[in-house]
Amino acid sequence: MAAVKEISIEEKLKGLVRLQKIDLKLDEIQILKGELPIEVKDLEDEIEGLHARQTRIEEEINGIQEFIESKKEGIKEAQALIKKYEKQSENVKNNREFEAINKEIEMQQLEEKLCEKHIKDATEEIAEKVKQLDLAKKAVATKETNLTGKKAELEKIIAETEKEEKEYNKQADKAREDVESRLLTSYDRIRGNYRNGLAVVPIERDSCGGCFHAIPPQKQSEIRIRKKIMVCENCGRILVDEELNDSIEVK
Ligand SMILES: [Zn+2]
Image (cartoon, rainbow, N blue to C red):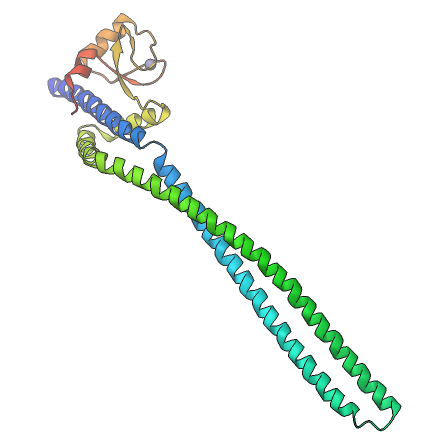
């Protein structure tokens, strides 16, 4: 029974070392891709925002154009009324009636002027919006060119590394099967804590291979026996002896 358990711990350690080495290969691929995936995502978001802005400006321009049309209608109505009043003024019976009609004509003339002023202002507003629209379109074009370049770069790297990544992911899944889940949880947690992604390290020159904290000889012997999962008291990383570490090769 004891013998089985002994092998089991050693196998678990080997599984962990294998997983660590595979994960480091996967990390290398991620480093190669670098910031590209984030840059691509950011550019896509920015372009989407600019498109939304473009649509908004276009809708605003449409709204102003409708306003101009309504004012043109207003001018036509005022002109028609003026004509009607002018005709009526030919047949007035007295001064009072004449003045009343004249007042109506003046009011319609004022209305006509007001409509013209509105049209002039709105036309200027449209010119300003067209400028904004033009800027937004240019910004989209620049960003789209940039995005195309970055996407091509990323796709090239992905194409180059895809096979490798798939293979390593497969190997990682298999290595995980050899390690119990409780240990895997610790491994993932420790790995996430360190930028270099090291959770399992060998003893190197009597020290922890992760933080270089000295390891007492007694503890080193215990690690070499491979009967217990030992961690560095300073950094918490799982420690293995150098020989076990070197015996695992990942290609
Ligand atoms: Zn350490």
